[in-house]
Image (tube, rainbow, N blue to C red; front, side, top):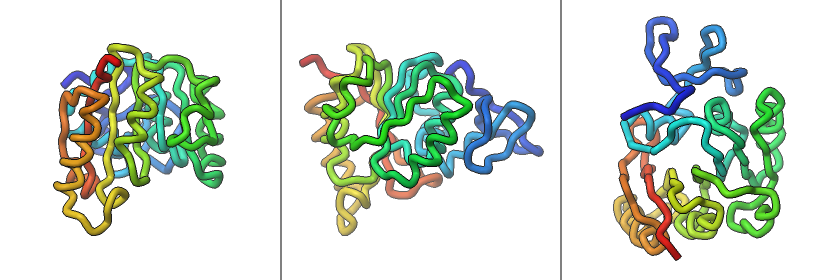
Length: 210
């Protein structure tokens, strides 16, 4: 697996970890300008640690769905181009705004990822959609936001089984999500994100032609 430009494996007090260069956001360890990308706090970080071929090269235009307080999207903005960060809950958006202060390419949007028509006038075509939304209907969210992806773009999704059905076997949930996603996307790679995130499935996909 090739890491995107701007992401490296860096030594932090004797422990080698993924890292990007930027202002710290969530109390992560730092070494000079480098900040540790903690895979236990980041599903995309876990996907990279698992060696998933995300297709990320660096400098992409990104739409991030479920940005929360900015833990992962701040790392993305460290190596990407324009990065649109959609978050529905007002409280974490305040911390997201703090993360954006030192990142001129990070654009927080207090919007609902299930209603992309409400931010379609702001978001340009993107190379990558990163999705980490803890809601029922995660495949539908991905389908609704396919409109922003370029033809050769990538969906990098972390599917949370417990958000779909807290009583169902996660393997069954993931099968259902894969089947639903396949209507709109070609699935390139999937992998469970244990031990970093239990009952989560990482998905790399590209949009099918309409």
